[in-house]
Length: 293
Image 1: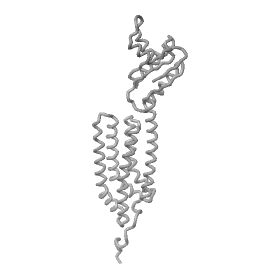
Image 2: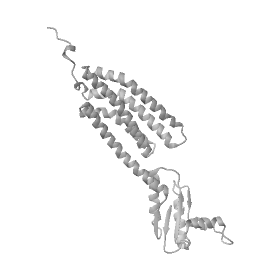
Image 3: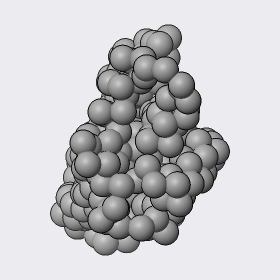
Image 4: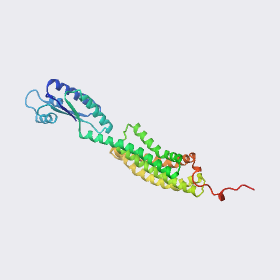
């Protein structure tokens, strides 16, 4: 809604013409479906005879008794928080050319501004979660290099999902940010299980390749069961008629599935490339092959 305050009545011909031009501009915006304002209502008043009661009621909605305070209402569908706020800013700039004071307000605008603020904070929180995860893996592996290598299969699914949102023209809203946080937690949980099993194998003196192979064999199956259950549960939302739930199903299921695949196929190779052979306990001398004397 656009509230207009002036020191003279808005139904005076020059001001009414300016209002009509503003309402026509608003009606031409691609996001706007309907416009209700003083100029449109005034056009409904018959030149002769009594004014219909419906028109009188509409006039009370858009003008006060003195005619110096006007209201222009814009009907806008759910175009997303970023697009809605951008439209409100365009409307404010165009309405500022009218005489008097201009205020762009409305419950949807306030709600979308709050949603956008939450999305920005969640984006920052997501970066903080990545930092905490990196620190946790570094403590477990006692190596910054191995920690960064282990972080790749956890962050890559989020990067792919975020790029997918951008490719589809979807802004990062609170729901998408929460989905990415949940997917990151599942991916990190799978990685930590694999890393813990691999370190246990190294502590028993197993070669790095055997320790990683056994870790995938032991923990990979459990991680698969968890990932399949979560992916299947989230994928049910793909058949929902509510768009946010479909986004939840597509984004959540694909991110968790990709995270498991990368944990099983990419993580062992990255760890070996980062020097996992030099971590943990060495193979006991009694188990090493002896040179002939």
